[in-house]
Length: 153
Length: 422
Image: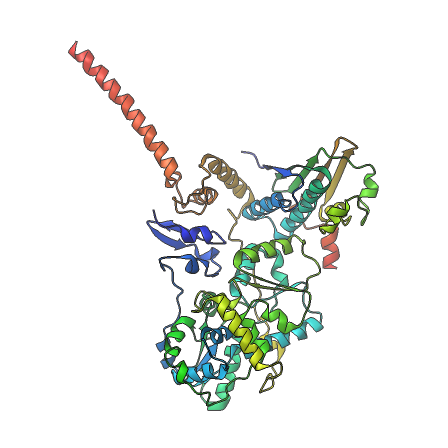
């Protein structure tokens, strides 16, 4: 008997209304497993941002979720344009989103920075023209994200 | 087998049909009243108090929800309805609309003191508060910690009457006249306080049956209207926000829409909003399952009555009420009803089993098993209150397999007999 649950989702491209569906499913599963609601919220928000990113920049991709009693890992993989300068992309407010996407209320340049602040560890690997993989790790035990620590203070 | 209308519409998957009867899983039910509304056979009823219960009290006070004013055609004066209530047996009335204005004043007070977590979610709809308690633990801190207008009205009505009559509080009975199925539960299992002051909840349709035949003859002899248009407006979705005077609000109604908005709030997709007014019923309280009139018609009537009242009709000042009297005295606690097990590893095992079972079910969500979806049946099996053969397709499969086995056996028997004959 393994103590890990793996979930796989395909995130359809160019459909902003569907974006967030995977995060919604994961949220439900985490509630059924009895994970701390504060942790669930962080996973859901980070994953939602990731889904939106894949939809607006990469024509969709996949989301793989690993749930264990210790941590929740989300791996978002796409074969989109890739990120040229990851440090720049991580800057709050920096955005390469199209005008159309911005008009829809997305692409404010907060996606990746938000994802980082909601996760305990985040890892981005990307190759221009090949695609991007974002790995998010959130521990289920102590709530230690900088966002929550700031909110508590 | 049984009818499956209600199980399909329940927003918390709280109903199962067993032996032809719908059963409610109590911990999951949020009292939204959706099942009562959708049942074409009127099999589900809200449990309310019979009118005669008022006679157990020496002094009987009606607490009419403002929705009551929208139930009658051609009534231009709220006073007629209020005088009517005295005609049918009440000694006094205390408008819940007036209590709503007190709630608004307390809300403004708390907002200006910066004591609330933004965005604030209204606590007026008990079904929404219960929904948050079972499904949106992260939003609990946003819920306005102020008693509902019904509870505030009950408290004040009793106090005022005790002063006026000199009677002991237990001789004074306060009865909420309700369009809402959830209010009955609130009286028995209060939200935000240990004990509700409400002595009974009478269904609005029961009161309507008594009032309708005489309403045309009632004269507005006594002036009983004390609420202004702000309080009366609470009957409609958006009324509480309007009374608050905040621009950055959203008013969402209908339980499915409410769930959508709460999901977005939880995932921080809704920004720039300060106040969320959410009602389980379409149109707000006017759409309640115990109301008589179509909610949309009632909404229009309420609006007309508000117009008649004018902006500053308040005939008595809003009574000075200490904030402490209307604040919640007990906290809202998260009740994780969806959790598969207290131990996470066991829960994970059950989850794996659930996924396997769900994969094996036909995914038609036909409801014949009594659960709303195949996945819900899988969950029931894992939780120990369902069987795979509750699924009609699985049962048929099993029977076919058994039948085939019997045919095989029978063939053996034939072969055996042939051997014997030879």
